[in-house]
Amino acid sequence: MLALAGWGINIDSIPPCPSAVGGVLRRVEEEKLIGVLAAAVAAGRIDVTDAEHGALTDAHRRAMGEALLLEEMLLEAVEVLNAAGIAHRVLKGAALAHTVHHDPSERSFGDNDLLVEPDRIGDAVAALTMAGGARLQPRLTAGFDRRFAKSVTMAWLHNTEIDLHRTLAPGPYGLLIDTRHLWEPPTEFVIASRRLHTFSRELHLLNAALHVALGDVEARAGNLRDIALLCNLPGLDTDLVTRTAGAWSCEAPLAAGLNAAAQLPVDLGVLGEWASAQEISAADRRLMSSYETSDHRFRRQALASMRVLPSWSDRLAYASAVARNPLRRAMGSRYARRS
Image 1 (cartoon, helix red, strand yellow):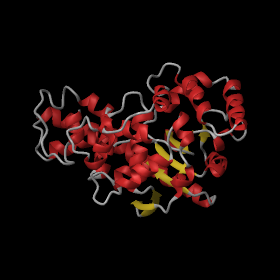
Image 2 (tube, one colour):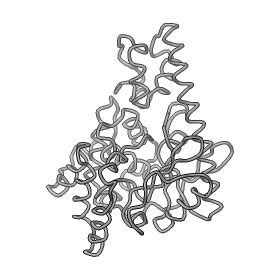
Image 3 (cartoon, rainbow, N blue to C red):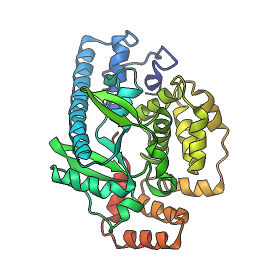
Image 4 (cartoon, rainbow, N blue to C red):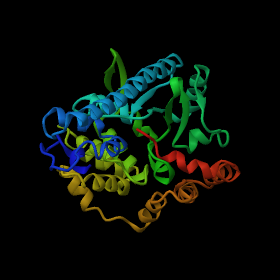
């Protein structure tokens, strides 16, 4: 999986492996590498039997069918937000497929992610609800989404989902991020002749690294590939990446995400060297420990979040909302998204 995830970045070979397709196809799909495997087979880098080629083609077609549906539903959601005058940025899967990967068909994803300004997240939820969406979990308290939430997950049209993000990470590090930095002038990309707004490559890299370090307990190889591709983009401002992480007090999760991507047989350049040289403080080790396992994750991140909130009024409002919420145990499972 790691060799496949690194293929075509700054290496052009994949070590031979038995049953290159038939024996690992399901795992490749889970790791979000089905498009990369299809590209490697098409380039003649992996030999397959006719039966394996047929199975791979079917799996890739299913993944791209889902991606096309999600892109269509993304355009519907963007139209709703535009009509309501709500600024937004497309994040993660759909944006990375069209701006970072060699071909959009190499990047599969399972939902859509949109950043909205904290003060407009309630308006965005209301607009999408009026258009046929439905919030999947109730609001904790008035103002919680705007002040403290990572995102609001909504069921959207044709059984798809949208995450409306306020910030880039759950728990304490999400609260440390200065969300004003996320609203720099956007980069544009195109789907079906429609221009969409997304992050700069530097913010995409920060988002990808934080997702690997603070999202799923076990990072998918496809997400590691996102980081490696971003690190190898020409003209990437590596100083801006590390300065921004420093301004957010997020050097530790940035380093963790980069070090995870260093498992790939790919040179991460200056940022790889930076990450390997980082010394994690005791305070960061305590915060990072709240993300390490899925057991009692919500409770541990809530306690860690209390340490970083800037005022007693914020801590009181946060603690009151979390303590009163009857769904708080279930909420821990919502941290691992599918993009």
